[in-house]
Image 1 (cartoon, one colour):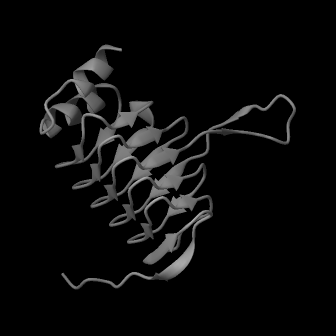
Image 2 (image 1 turned 180 degrees about the vertical axis):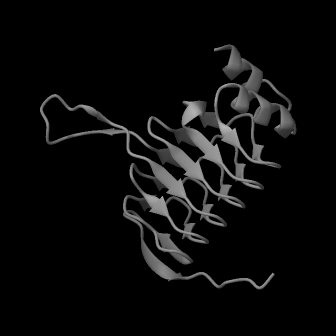
Length: 158
């Protein structure tokens, strides 16, 4: 509870402070990570986020299972990474904690949903309001509900 307040009520640009708070609660956070104060991470100890990545305003990382976010990744405003579900085939509906992986240079656009057990490949884009319930291949752009392949993302020469 104290960690939530320290995080939520910090100034908008206090990215270093929020990196510190997440690390204090067990997250593995890279350098120059920008996580906005209105973003929500349920279980910091299940979060790994690489260098130069960001999580936008009101983004939700529901990380019952491990969520790994690579380097130079953008998780846009109101995106939802959901690493928990229930086994609908079992009448007891036990909790499943399926990991999510978002590889380097990927972009999860505004209001997009990434479901349990999904891997978003390197450089891939999950379009605005898309619902990714299956893996997204490297350097592909997907959109819609359910997310479908739209086109390739061009590689940028550095």
